[in-house]
Length: 209
Image 1 (tube, one colour):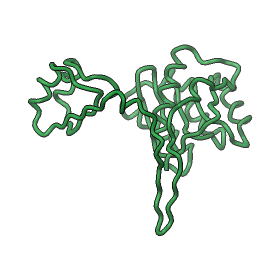
Image 2 (cartoon, rainbow, N blue to C red):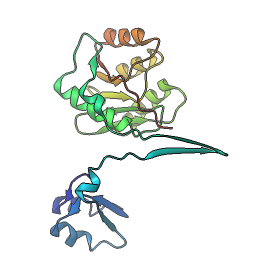
Image 3 (cartoon, rainbow, N blue to C red):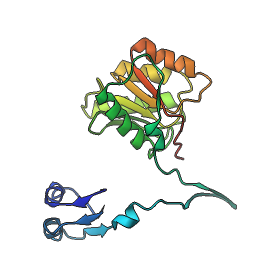
């Protein structure tokens, strides 16, 4: 967690199986409660370390080949995305879009994340087809009994075809955030327009393999 753990959080974790909690710190009440947990490790990360910019590299090794690249750090595009549809997202949809985009960044590609204003509703990940990720995210939400109507979806890379938008719209998603960059962007935006969706374009993709 990105804050100091307090009594309320410690009590909320009482019945959850946990082996490690990482936080900016732990207040006395939290320590008193969590110390009673067997084999639970508490890791405190100082503010100066937590907030420090990470300039290390990400590495991928295949046989005798090693690929080094800059880590995918930060989300500056959240401050500069553009609305591609005639309908702008509502305030609640903007909040949901921001959450979906942040989570999609850390999900294996092809990633589709459906969120409401408080958290994740469904996730589709690791598929060769983006429309299949859309279907999986919708199915996960439905099987969990979670309401999709009025939610937002984040796609870590562009939609190659309008079919993914159609699947999400049919399920009840009303706003989508995606990087854009497909040769069929116009068709994808047109599909969102037909369905009355709001669509925002970030201009930056997060492709996690």
